[in-house]
Image (cartoon, rainbow, N blue to C red; front, side, top):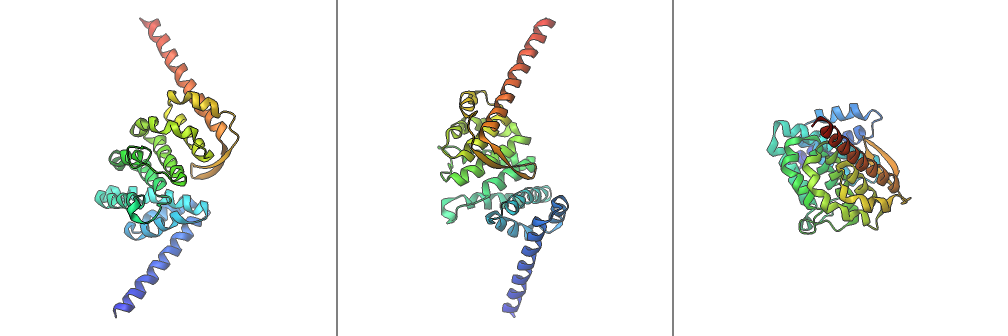
Length: 251
């Protein structure tokens, strides 16, 4: 009897994973994402996390998007349940877990971008993975994921990761072009003036990376990302100068 129940549960699990896989492959992903949010969170989260290891980049990134949306929905109803998932992703990055934690930094970043309460609690944890005096990630592939995760948070909650800038500037000098490009992207998002010299050195960097933006995987040159970051820095300087001029004129 027990064996029969276990077999049934295994079948249900396999069926659910196939269903999730089909939704992640769907041409209409926005509609599929709504359907994923409608599935029981505690059941759907396991197959979603398993797709963080998928070799198909589109499936993997869509799983990351879905995890952020699903966990944010869970947090609105059951904050402790959402914390359990966050701790699971953190455990995946722990040496004692026995794994490597592919996709975990990206998933954490997407969750924090999607839910303010979780972002306030866990943004410092995400940043700690970039700190040599913290939970520093040495593997370059994980560093790529970490920078994307921090960059994703910076898009909507820059104030929570602004202090991370000092730890991220060294990544602009990385031998890994994807890391350089992602670091340049973040410098523009956070408008980090201290990154200006390094960004100028990257302007002629022709290496091309793939970056997931607005639910699309696009190719971009490191040099262009550096140029865009410098444009944002210059725009901030110009805005500050204009404000000071206007203030002086009023006094």
